[in-house]
Length: 151
Image (cartoon, rainbow, N blue to C red; front, side, top):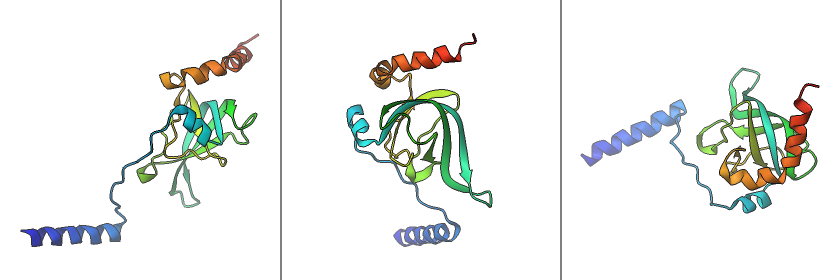
């Protein structure tokens, strides 16, 4: 019985190697407070997501990351405004990318190159954990809302 299980496992390993099937990996992150995430991030800002597209190479194959387009960027840390209007997050798999929805406001915690880390607490602004951050930029939020109004 044990010999046949070993043989099946070996066959699955060989087939996985030949056909590019990789074992599942779980994301693991050290739990940090929001203040610690702010400290560890090069940029922390609130932005409106205008697009999210899977990046492809010249052959049309996925590069494994998603390009997230932004507008209405309100910085909390790292500069006025950050030097980019797009972010990059892993598409899926063991890299544990951040899932975003278009036409939503988010808080983003990113590195100096505009990449979201696998442990980023980034999320929609209406989450309770972002209440204090929202209140800290409320004047800027209202400036954007007034600017969008038709005269």
